[in-house]
Every structure is written in C-alpha cells, then in structure tokens.
Length: 486
Ligand SMILES: *Cc1c(COP(=O)(O)O)cnc(C)c1O
Image (cartoon, rainbow, N blue to C red; front, side):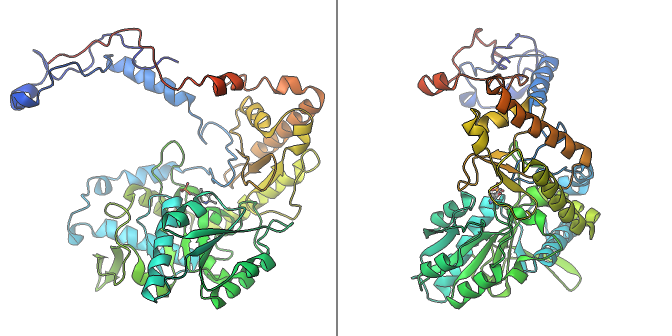
C-alpha cells in the first residue's frame, strides 16, 4: 500500500488561502505567516477517504474475526456504549464547568465508583488512571506514600511472581522500589515456601494477578495475604484478569489492599489500536486518604469533586481521567447488571472447552481446569519444525487473530488463549478445528505451514534480511508534494 505522500495527486482538497479560500492570512500578523512550504500532500476529500478506508480495512478487530489474545480480554464492545458516550450532554461538557452544571456527569462517575466498589469489595476509588499500567503506577505511589506516612521508609522491596505481566515490575521500579522475583511452583502458583524465605521488614508489597497470567487461580491466596499482612506489607491486585471472577469472589475477600481494573478489558470499552483506556484504582479504607484528587462524592443531594484528600499523592491525569471511556464502561455495567456474573462463568467455560479439545494435539503444561484463559506450549510442534510464531502466522490465514505468544515467560513456546464470553460455540469449534488441522499439517508437512501468512496484506517476510538490513525509515517520495502556498 502506498503512503499518502505517494498518493499525492495534486487535486484540490482544502486550501486556507487564495481567492476562494478563507481569509486567515488577513488576521495573522505577517511575522507568523509561514514563508516556506509545509510539505503536506494534496489530495481531494474523496482520495483522502479512500486512503484511510484502505488503512482501516487492513486493521484486524473483534468485529472482523475471532481475537483470542490471552490476557487482553478482547470481548465485544457493544455499540450502545458508543451511542451513550456520544450524547450531547456528555460531549459538550467542559471539564472546568461548575459542579452545579455537571451533575449528570458527576453522578455517572460517582455511580461507576460505587459499582467498582461493589465488584471489587474495596472502599474507595479513583477513576483517573488511563490504563492498567498507569493504575499500577498509581497504586505503587500510594504504597510508597503510605509507608512514608507511617514512618517505614525502609520498605524498599516489592515482590513480583515470575509469571507476572512486565508492567508490574516496571511500575514498582518507576516508584523507586527494588523488585524481588518469586518463583511459581509446578502447578503454576506462587510457591509459598519461597515467598516466606523472601520476606523481611523491608518488603513493602507483593503484586499479584489472580487468576494469574497462566489462567490459574492462586489457591493459596488467603494464606499469602495473611503472611504478607503479618509482615506489615501490602497486597496489590492486578485486575487485568478480573473477567474471570466478576460476582463470584473479589480482591477484598482474597485479602488485597489495592486493585486496578482495566475498563478496556473487563468492561468492554475499546481496546487496542491506540486506546484510550482506563485503569481505575480501588483501595481499602486505610489507603483512601492517599488517592489522587479529586474523588467524586455525594452529599446533601449533590455530586461534587472533592479536592480535600488529606495525604493525596496528587493528580495522575488531567482532570478526571478518560471520561468518554468511563461512560462506556458504566453503560456496560448497567446494561449487564447481575449478568456480569454469567459473563465470567461463560468466559471460564469457553476457555475450558477449548483447552479440553486441544489437550491431545498440544502440550498443556498446567493440567488443572483453567479460569478465563489457558496457556499451551508449542514445544512438540517446535521439535517437528514449526515454532509458536509459525503457528500464530498460520492462524492469520484463517482470519483468526493469533493468541498472545511467548508470554508468560515461564512457559516454553507459549500460546496464551483467551476466548472471552462473547463467542458462540460455533466460533469456538471452528477455532478448535483450525488448531487441530495446524497440528496435523505440522506433523505431515511443516514446510507448508512455514509459508504463512499467505493471505495477509504483508506476506511472509525474510526475517534474516530484516534483522541484518533493517529498513526503518521511509525514504521514497516519488513526487514533490504540491503545496498550498500562502
Ligand atoms: C493488560 C495487562 C496489564 C496492563 O494493562 P494496560 O491497560 O495494557 O496498561 C497488566 N497486567 C496484566 C496481567 C495484563 O494483562
């Protein structure tokens, strides 16, 4: 596909000067008027539309095909969310408008906070963080400030399991903590004895994901929270996998103190391709004085922004977070109601169904039943001549987005599959058939599989050449851009 610079036709698009253009130049002081060419391509409106339509057609999305990207919860984003978030009253509201002008928006944020409190079991919420990783950073800043406030600044260590998402150690490190890794046992869970051996009075917190990134529920989580709290440490819950447990249990019952929720995963807001996202952080009572300000409150029949948070870590995001995303998530929660519980049940059922059907053809390192996702190992196939990367590329030829690959790091040749509750049995069966067919193909004719992807816009690339002679800069502009001169 050509770039828009190569597609430069010279056609009249819009011109901000000239006889029939606008009179902008009249109102701009001469000193500020550009003297040289700006270097933009010139195309007609229709040509621009075609260019961007072609780009968007190349994009893969959940509306285009099955998207079992493990750990990412690529569920369907109901279109009613879009409708509601584009209501005039929401999109024309200025963030600095007075509380009395914005009661509806504040009510929505307040009720979303309340819903997240109910779902997580926590006592207070900030809606500000713009992503899961940003929620982790916010959470770790709260951990740091908490220990400063109680005078335990020696607590410099954060424990992170070896199955954790890379953002966990990165966020803790950014707050100045030292990362201590705890190993998983042969059942894919935090090894309690190892954990105990790592504890001392310098440990600030443990960051855990439950179910963890292997799709396994940490059975010892209550014992872990007891051990950590006895040690004076806090427990951070990475809620990226919250889609597995909604309404069945919650992080508070498991003993956690701080939780982030990825609205763009669990609560069906747009995801991938640039966001924006939202990663609200929920905390237990003793940590609420550290939340970023403002928090949305309700008193005397009025919703308001409370900036008076005693030991607030400050602001972590402009204004109140990605408001349009909060509207979408709230719409989804209200629409689903108690069916959220059913969504989790279906997500778990779908994952177990696929896992059972694939277990003879692929190695599944952790045998117990899984939660909303599971990890298989392409080790057997690797020995037969096709790595996990090859399997992923072969799936693209069947209009399926590849699962997450080579993560978690503790599984060789990992493929992490998360179907979500959005998919019908028909779609799951089709995916299973294709995975089984690929396993057969690899046994019989691995060379053929290695030719994939064959149907994608970019076919199989020469990886050796790409590594040896990386061509990273676009050089070729065949035509001098036709310019709108001032
Ligand atoms: C997605 C994910 C994150 C990071 O969330 P973002 O919203 O992408 O920043 C953290 N941990 C786990 C387990 C995840 O799956």
